[in-house]
Length: 232
Image 1 (cartoon, rainbow, N blue to C red):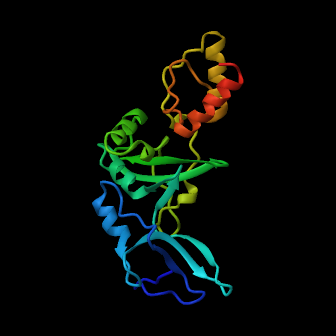
Image 2: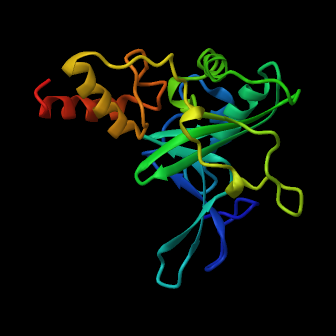
């Protein structure tokens, strides 16, 4: 645990967690800027140390109490994600004025990325499919938000700072939805029911896309298992 000057933090004082030793990787694949920021020469031992961005403090018994993050990096399904990088890509989309990305866990155990945007012109409607396509062309799939909410303005605290807790829970309108057509036949109806239960959406049409409705590879594995359980 090191302080802002990368000196050992005293007992009970908050510091940032750095990891050293032979288990530290060489860096991020094809991400030299991020590697330079996170993987540093270890001043205490031979080798390098990893700057985690996690905050903590030593308790009298020697254990470490976790105090949260010092940046906007989150971890979803094993991937470390810089929310600011997604926000910057969204802000570059024509017509977007402001953008905020959160990692929400509205359903216990299911964390997902949600994007909030405002338009430069109040009358502009930012199309979810276009926003998602823009991000898919610039970011790996695990960094592309599942839901998109357009707001007239971002909520602020009395001090004028972004009030992240006031950002609304996304509803079905925040997902890409195809023109609805009723599922046909027994298999399609069973699949629609399974998708709805798994993705927490009220209505699934025969032209909808599993991943556009918030699905991902881990949920797909669960879906396949549930399909097997009903004989598909």
